[in-house]
Image 1 (cartoon, rainbow, N blue to C red):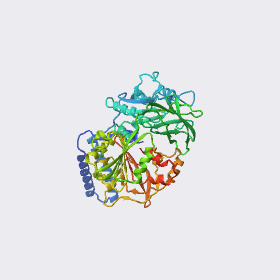
Image 2: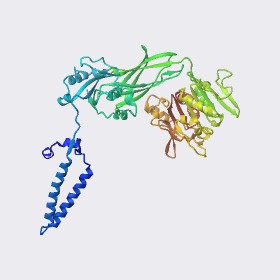
Image 3: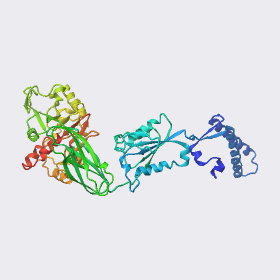
Length: 560
């Protein structure tokens, strides 16, 4: 009925644009229409005779409609609808050919099902309208000249990279849409960027996804990721963080190989509350050199895709232990117990600089008589010889602005680790928030006149983030780890830390006036990491715990 009265279907009116072919302005049409309506009303009023007002109104409306139609015809209305010319625009079909596509739920693989659908061709209207280009997607994007020439199974599904690469080709040839045929999610690096989706949307090309295979595989295990440092020092203990995707709850067996030698075999408990779980694994001591580590999940019964059960990592063990510089501004218990905890670690060589008077420092752990003879390193080269720096309760004014800059660059450029400790002359009370180093810290230190350091005992609690961090892992079992932290003695003091910066993570917390306040905060800065430990009283853990309890030593070893 709509098309009968308006000559074109409704969707054409919704998508089209109405304009006047006469070229006369619209305001002139409205002006003429207003004058005609006024003249009609005046003429009827003068000739009304004995006709009632209602009848006059009906006559005026009918005459006005006729006049409006005549005026519109003079202006020559035209409906313009943009239509795609046949085969002028391209339709890109991206076919996932990663290894998982070679598996299926029957004798036919997911890839074969997808190829059969593509071989049958597109629906008639689409095939007439678009020129179709087919690409294979795995590690990279490759055009397919024939569906019979499929490349071998790929080890990755870099869907994000391939989509962006396809969009970039739209600048050279009109691209109407992209159809992505895949069985899983992206495991490349592009889709992890927060701005990736916005970058894709800027091209204005629609993307349609076609899923192949079951959405959930209860019998499948997948080792999604292994986070492990790429380099370590002789005698250092390394902890790997593993992310496992599982279709159901149960037990999984993890094995770690160094080449062909079995290093670790450990069971993993997979909870039913989530499809992904995170686990920690401490590696045994390894000799200096390059080690190719293989992390392997033993397959479950009935599991067909075994290629996603494996992750490889390279770990380089240096010849020398990690060198740590600890600068302290006053003799205190924390200094003594940190030295005691780290002196027992074979992978750490601690060099300390204790300020005993305004111009005098007490050196411990130096390798030569000239090391730190003039106090804190004055140049970048001397400072960059260390792997980590601890700044204790020392006023920022004790170091020059150039030394502040060197400390900042030590983290950002050298890739070192910086730990700031609380104290009466530490953090905000030491003026560190007003130095160039403040930009590298994970906190915005308080800017106030009143002291922020308090010698009040407080209870330490593990934060949500801390439960996943290898730094605060006292046990590989999450519940036991939480229990061990809840049993820790109070620390001797605390310092108001300030506001967390974006990207910073609070690993340990204390309760102040009923509110959680960060105690241990971590942040990546440039190539390195910066930390703030807002207490100088962890020594009470060693004093209050049994002599054979290693929690204090474990914490400091993992922190550094």
